[in-house]
Length: 47
Image (cartoon, rainbow, N blue to C red; front, top):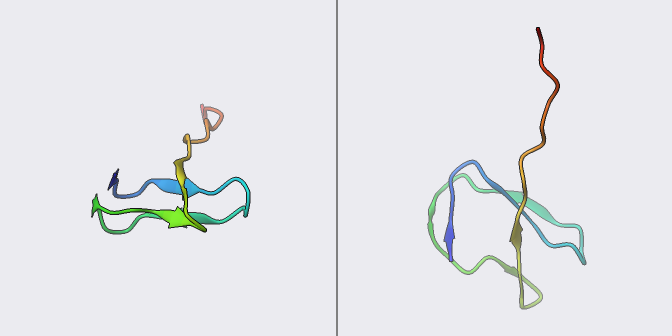
């Protein structure tokens, strides 16, 4: 799995979230479960 710079990853069961500060190939796991890429939050327009 390739982690992406500036993306957040989460483990639903434990609630752990990490922010990737260095991209590359890596096994991002918690207790043998792979962490999932979080979707960005949509913020309201500041018009």
